[in-house]
Image (cartoon, rainbow, N blue to C red; front, side, top):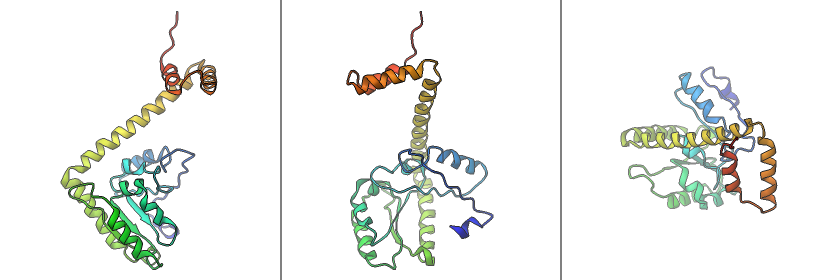
Length: 215
C-alpha cells in the first residue's frame, strides 16, 4: 500500500464507516462517482471485512472479490451464507502457509452456481511476492467481459440504482424530520412511548413521517 500510494496514477483514500452497517462508509459510493467523473478507469473498494452482514459491497460493485487466508480462523467464514453469496471471484491469499490446499478445496466445493454463464473461480495468491496476481487480474477482466456480453451489467446497474435510491430516500426522510421545528420534542416523546411499550416502532415511525395537520 505504501508503494502504491507513491504512484502518481493511483489515488488512495481511507474512509471510516462511523458505525454505518454493511462494511462501508455511507459516502463510499459518492466518492466512487467522483472518481468515475475524473476519468478513473478502475476503482477498488476495500471493505472493513465481510461476513454474514457486511455484504453491502455486493449490491454496489460490478465485481466482488472475496479474499480469504489459511490458518487464520477464516475456514469458519466459508460456511457462512453471506460469504458464499457475494463473491464473483474468491482468492486464497498467503498460499505459502499451511492449510491453503484445504481452504481452496472447501471453497471450490461449497460455492454455488449463481449465474448460468459464470462460476466464481477460486484462485491462489501470495501477494507479498506478487505470485498469482496476474491470474486474478485476468479473471477480473473476464468477469467484466461476461457482464457486458450477458446483459448482467444492466441488471446489476438497475439493482445498484434501486439500492442507492432507497438509501437516499431514507436519508432524506431523516433530514426532513430533523428540520421540522418541533421534531426533537416529538422524537423524544416517541422514544419514550416505545420504551414504555405503549407503541410499536413501525407505527411511530410512520406517524413521525406524516405531515402534521394544522388548523
